[in-house]
Length: 343
Image 1 (cartoon, rainbow, N blue to C red):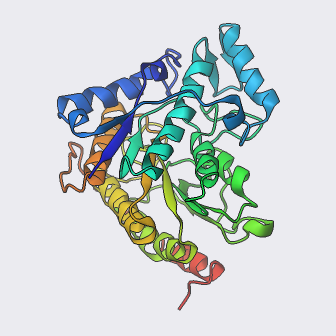
Image 2 (image 1 turned 180 degrees about the vertical axis):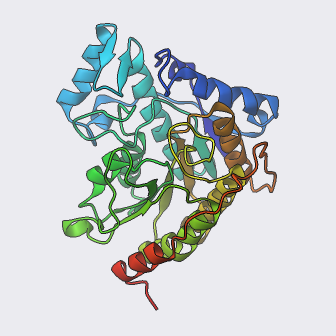
Image 3 (image 1 turned 90 degrees about the vertical axis):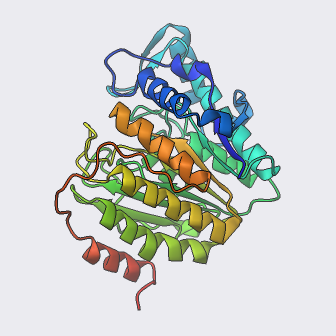
């Protein structure tokens, strides 16, 4: 299995001391991957900056220029949550371009799958506005890039970050070529992603939002994938699966209140990889989004890479939360009916 990783030191230059989304997140991941001897077993895909034309497939020219100007002035804030430092524009262009390079390598057959270890994250970024720690929407840019290839007619984006990827959904809400699937704590930042949302216009039926109450963990997440995401993926038949991988639904994450374990995350990754094998010849790329407990985040990424390599190894030093989780049965049944999966 040719599993790739994508990384560049400039990803660390986007940084703000004391902010939850800081360079230590990626430093911790890279340190653990190095300690476990994993990096040498992976294919290194060299990132390159996304071009202005590529960024404009998703973002408005005025917003792209705003990020560049704020960085050029030495940094600032786009909103209360979202910062720009002096090298953030460079980092964000290289983050987006890193995932585009991974798409190219995958479609060329140079790799079988991969994990883009990049930041700043992207799934909250709208076409004309950054928010929620995100500058450019990496996964949306990768989907548009893939769809520009004659090899790809349909892309499925799976988002298991604990926060709803409002930017990604908004960008593709009316696009029948992109199916967006999200599990997220609700009501929670950013307050979007109601279960009744299914897309609009020609994109009707290509959004599966699964808003979850606090406390849902391994059992609930796996039930959702098995009973909702997997059959809808079979119906949609994507040519590529992109995953917005956030590890902040873990029970120890300081910014949320879900109860996934690291073992549960491995099972979730394996289900998505199996979905890709069934639907699109295994073509799947994970890209980093949230996760704010450094050790959980690092082990979560490590385990996902083990799964991409086809291995059964699980590194879980934390175990489970040992709490009963709320049932998702009624929500699953509602969504089955809404998406015509009942019976």
